[in-house]
Length: 110
Image (cartoon, rainbow, N blue to C red; front, side, top):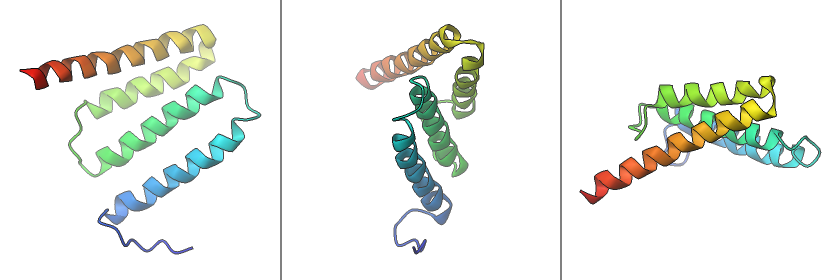
């Protein structure tokens, strides 16, 4: 399989994006037999990887990427403390996203 980049994407983004696609496909299959909490963990890992790809290219993002990635990692690691802690941290992360989207929408309507 060729990894030649025929797109407008820089090579630094091209391969990591395809590696992420491969990760998603493989994990879609693995999730069939894995415990139910692995699904949210996998989704958080996908978000973290995508944010890392975008931030590595200095693409201007509408969020403080380092802080958000840190919160994603905290949420992922909280599963060690148990399902309740993980769900609470996941809810907090969702609330951060909702706050961002709400604030962003207000700014656009000004």
